[in-house]
Image (tube, rainbow, N blue to C red; front, side, top):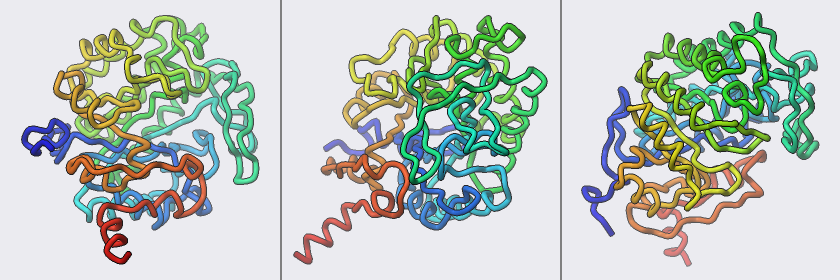
Length: 377
């Protein structure tokens, strides 16, 4: 077992305006536990995040910036006063436990259904292209249902979408977050504009790489105006195929995007290095990672199926600065202590990932809990 001084995972790190105690990040994880009316976080959510406050930084679950941005039942929002108050429970709990937390700002674009939209409206996208195989759920009873063909946003509507992100960013400040992450990954609205497979517009927001970057950069600029660049990050998935996504030249798209993000001086880029469907380990897109790191000189957060040893190796090799963990963080609220002591990890229960109550959410045992149970046996 390595000492903290020699273990890359447990070295402190300066991230923008924050001093992180370790290099472990809790990646954004949709759990569909905002079960109160109005998509409002509750004390149950506050306890979940409080339990995980030992990581260097928590990035919250994806949080819709507007009613139009909603794509799944029971996901939280950041567009109403009640939601701000609910998130304040979370940020207070995390800060009282000594942690840091960013809010992930989210608009799903076409990955929605009229049943989830205001007035039963058709979900919006850059182009009216139905994502083949993409699904969502609209209620506890519905199960997974197919996504339908979306409506293309009119150019005149684009500034309104930017304002949705600006409003969400302002509300995140009111709710007490330490910063925000812009969700530009996994086939949602910003990703849909970035990539050529989903963006087939012929106006100033489609076609060339420069045009496809236009809306994403407008959103980045609006959020920076609210928070300052050193409190803003972004999540990208340059090779992700989730939600029927593809790009004809991701090297060019993301290499250029990285340069534009570097010009703005944002705090970090979090990159989903797998396809979101299990394609990781030896299949990381090293050429695209290199292109992003060549263009963007700030903090690089690696994500995608990492275990502790892979994370240590990539950190030691300088391939990343921080590593975000997903499923291990769900089942191990004390993941930091387990990795520090080389202790066994709890297995996760995929049946409880989405929806439900405390079971599979706040009831995973810590090492302390397990020691107490053994002493009673």
